[in-house]
Image (cartoon, rainbow, N blue to C red; front, side, top):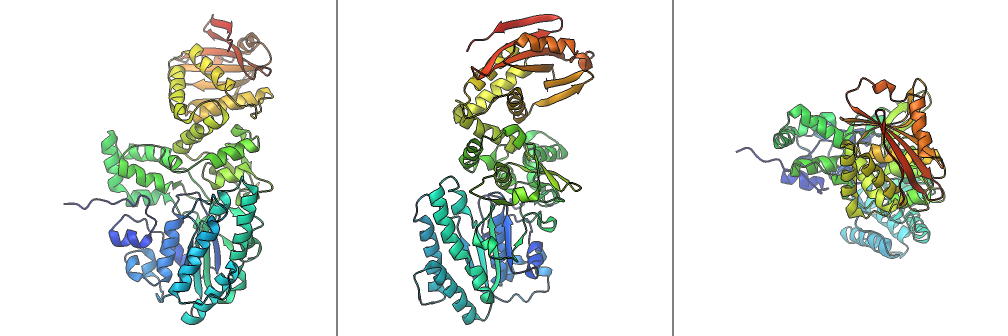
Length: 530
């Protein structure tokens, strides 16, 4: 009987994966790259992207556990497999809601190391205790200490909107991490993982020679799953999923790509699949927003609202690498936070201008992004978002213009006053965002021979041509569609053409009226009172 594949969902221990026979995608070639590449390293990746597992493999490597690497790339290297002392600082074990949480986590690790190596406590100050531990261990073993810090920035990320708590945690971490420089003579390697490079933190300002691997092409696939790795390691899972859904294998691969692929972490990065979602779908055989559902997105929504961000511009933007590299609490950048947390990714790199083009990675993030943001910006409750979206899609696909316009009207009426709809372009952007995040075929400012269509929405049965007027009658918008013959390019199309003039009232802060023409007949022309 063929042995069933064991998918390591939620498992982050390399030793457990290897001893218990879980599936493991070999990333040990990157250990080989790191050995002689320097002493200090940082890797930034979104949550649940495999950072902890890689750090765990690095721990086992330096502990000399060669048997765990049998058959893997690193076992072919010329390496002595001598044992180094490893200090593994896991900051992922708390949510850091109370002032004392970080102290308790650090105290737990320091006491454990002191007991393991029988080190006398000479000072109560955390940074001095840590320095004493590093020095004593190095002198006793005759080896440089390997220090691995998992989610070094979690206390900061979880308190980015609480200035006092944030500053307190930052000062404590800065004191602790300052030892990486002052204890350099006793250190073999320092490797930190996290979501972001926080500026004004001594680990980065004090270590001039720290290598940030986050944007380097040669390390772009250090976490996550490439297409080649997917096809090499998950053949059984793909075949079982295809059988479950009644598809051919190539069709299933295309569906997996649409849902969970699309991440890029450097200018020449290969396509990267979300590893958490890939493992989940092969175990459960059902497409879902696994990664989105696994974490709290309130941090991101609060940051977007705090900065009055234009969502449509954010999800389709260009920026420099410098914009994406760090976070500064005194000058927060939503673009950087969206990228570092995995809601945006690099879509293209403009070599001449040195600019990254960003966008939403895949269908999972697109759906999840829309679902978690709507409750923060509108009167919709979280549990009603998905039914609302599906009803809206049905109405659009069935040509029920009056119904879906009423639904859009209710949505705009429920938006909070902190959203800025102070000009026509902002309303147009909001409509574009809604349609695009629903997965519909939508274009903005679509060029024709005599102008630009504000919103062009197409389904298998209908072509919707929408013109928007800000504080002006809907009839004026409908007249512009006719005068500029916007529907002419689809005159031979078998689909029904629906021309919609929309009026937005700045005083009422909502879609106020609309009128619709199907063919030569105006089928609806009336004010819709809310």
